[in-house]
Length: 101
Image 1 (tube, helix red, strand yellow):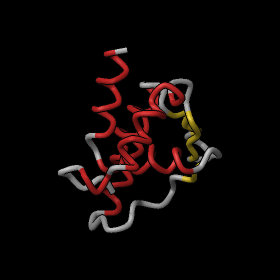
Image 2 (spheres, rainbow, N blue to C red; image 1 turned 135 degrees about the vertical axis):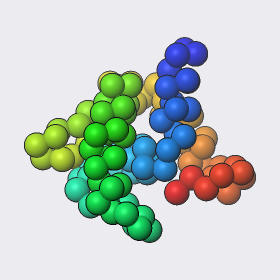
Image 3 (spheres, rainbow, N blue to C red; image 1 turned 90 degrees about the vertical axis):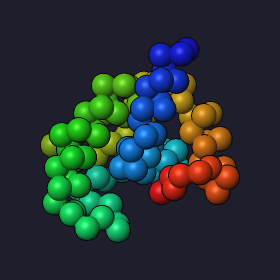
């Protein structure tokens, strides 16, 4: 259990990964990940980071399944294990010392 918690906290340490996980928490179907996140100045760089760093990491952790051709993500085989902690974090965003958006 400790290993999955470590992977979850690593995943939550990045804003792009948080957005993906929180979106999947709210929506059980697939999400399109073509458009860069709002509020990011270097949208091209953010898109490259998402494709080459963040999505592969979340997929390696088993938190998402990522169809690279369609550029969509769905809940992965480990998502159910992290869902309770994601809900706690998402429900208490205003109490945490960092911005989780």
